[in-house]
Length: 97
Image (cartoon, rainbow, N blue to C red; front, side):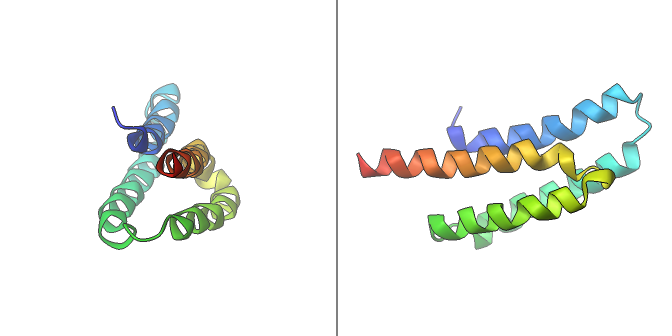
């Protein structure tokens, strides 16, 4: 498994755990967040293959947005964004070697 897949896996798991834990009560929120993740993945592959610093900046800007949307389930995706930042930093170190 590539390290770059970790944030995406965390995003799906971060949305699925509350869904199952609540007995599928939060399925509308889960569906909305999964659609946003799918759109981000699709657009990200087309738009974000650019510079590493741009991807890190987008992730850092995304963190406060998720905190503001915490009551709507945004906190479910915060670990995925933190992992995204970590992966970008680790991959940069690998490239420098």
